[in-house]
Image (cartoon, rainbow, N blue to C red; front, side, top):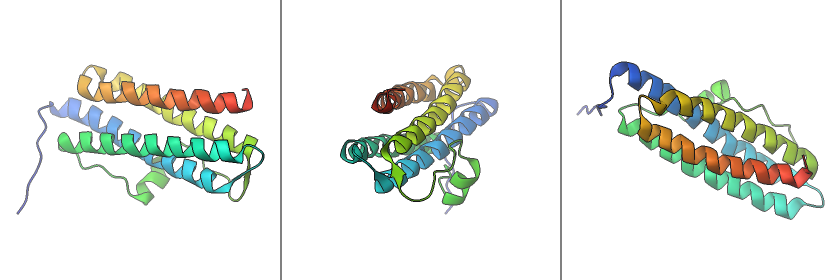
Length: 158
């Protein structure tokens, strides 16, 4: 039995929205992986607070990745969160291997969040006209990511 979910959006709008959702899905999956990698490898006097703060980022990224993927599915677009797709298309820089000093871990997270927020803002603008429902997801996502960004910047005073 074959079943296809059909969108109410015109094809051109669906293409724009689909590309935005897929790009954001990849960045969110990668953000959660980056935060977990650092979570397991952070060392230093602020280990505990950063370790716990990273869990908050992971929870946000995982929650929104599900929201974004389900929005794509609702529009008839199959989301692609496979590791090979994430590795090939994420906007986030690769994380250093091994232990990370707390100050370096914070800098890495600031950069990862900046990349994710930058993409989300661009995508938010691109979907505003064709699909305000998806735009709303991007608005809320960006606000939550910016809060994490602020908190990590405050950790290093930069």
